[in-house]
Length: 613
Image 1 (cartoon, rainbow, N blue to C red):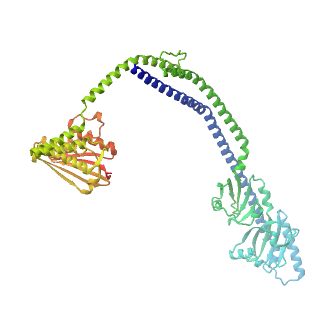
Image 2 (cartoon, helix red, strand yellow):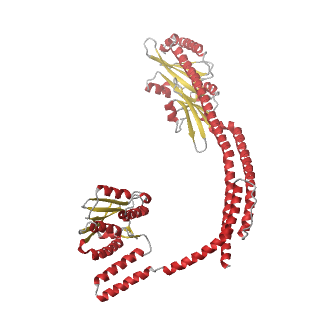
């Protein structure tokens, strides 16, 4: 009766475990179903939305960059045309015969002649310059100090204006240039009256057309507004014009005009001539598009922050985001409904398992479906039927198991009994004066104790060698002077780690093949050295050895799986040692064998050099 109660409790525990695992499966299945449905439906939509959005951003960036690049090229062309017109205007005035004659005259001529020359020069200047707009001032400087200017510009030079003290004059003389463009500056720096405007100047040396000697200079100042009108067509947050010396000729923010353009990418702009650069700062990213003129050497660049550029597609981004959210919510609702429809039959199965947990094995589930839940219910019905059948079988099996345990307990021999018996035999042999028997008992007792001792599988080399010496002692009692063992091991190596019981099988194998197979005297040498962070141990004998075929078979067997190795008994000990080394230290370490027929065999163990602790 007690046994039956015990069985019922055990079976109930098993059923509870099945029920617990089933519930874990239910929740896991529900989670997997929801995640799978979301991955199948929502994830592709999200991926497509992200892909479309990124493509839109890339397309917009490329289109804007291309548009701005084309616009900059057109602007540079217009600037070049303006500058070329400026060059032509200066050249036309400088090459005029009347201007040439006036500049070559001496200052000692009469006042009336000077007035006439001034009127003539002014007439020529106005006639040539009338074809060019945005000229703020035009002055011709003779080498004798006379100045002729364009009238009607609201501008005049300072009364103390000295050409030779001007920076442009010093520069053009030092560089020995024929012309010079003066970067943008404020016009009030050099005029007495007039509007406060930003201008840039062009200086050209006037030479005598006959002698080619310098006879004067012409300076034309052009209103920077000439470029402002051209740059209005660029859709940019910032538009800048810089010269080859990085001086700012034009800037959307006028306070930066005439300053140096100091950025970490300015040298790259001047080197590449045209293209675009993505510039990232701590707060924002900008697209910098630039184009360099082949006429003036000026670089026009447009700076457009990407957040301003992408603000155009914010509405599109919101539509994509709301669409994704709606799809995800719909997927979650559908997944919950589908998982709930699966949970209901599983919950019913759970209630029946609860009844079986309390010992009711007569219940049966009415299976109405043929899906996985129906199959699980059918299996549960079969399980309950088998449980009832197994109760009697378990009862009988338990009785037999108890009887077997009792028999094994009665037949069990305590290993310490054998060890104690060897000690008693040792004492008795000493009392009888049988020293060899006493010594063999002690050696065998130490071997037996070393073999059955519990603990780590690793020992020191000293302990393993001592075990081998005990074994050799017993063998020498049997073989006499036919067996000699030499140990070539430095004292400091005895503290290194070695796997327990791997040397004795090698010595035993050497005795078997070195003495018993040959019938002659055998010398076994055991040596150990350190080499490249490895402990190398060799067991060498001068026995019968092996021919090449035998050696090859043994070597190959060390690398084969146990189920496909040859079944020769002589190789079992060697394979066992090799397997144990690889098991504990990995395939980098192991065993190798070499030797020759009728000369002997050398077995080498390769182990890691680790101090035993």
